[in-house]
Length: 90
Ligand code: SF4
Image 1 (cartoon, rainbow, N blue to C red):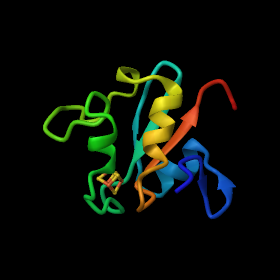
Image 2: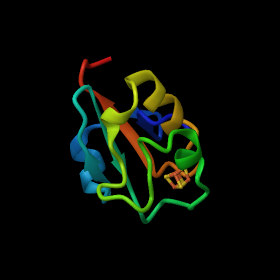
Image 3: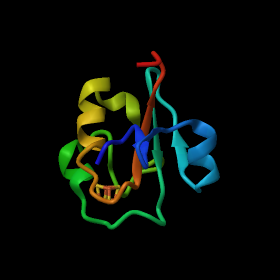
Image 4: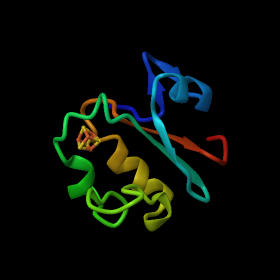
């Protein structure tokens, strides 16, 4: 699933917070997560356990991975529970 869009529209922070996503800020990339949507399939944790670690607080640390790598893992989330906004506007 494309982590930068919902229903074909590019996500905005306002849209995501409105929908109940929580923000996990990084230097170059913010990751957003909705526990209500998460299907607990674990692609994220398997994709990069340094960024996504369930037992840790915060459980998502965007800066533990590179921007492109983080995006690649986020896009493997099948439920749409993970979204991202790049800070370089791309
Ligand atoms: S990949 Fe998506 S649905 Fe699966 S555990 Fe991670 S956030 Fe939840």
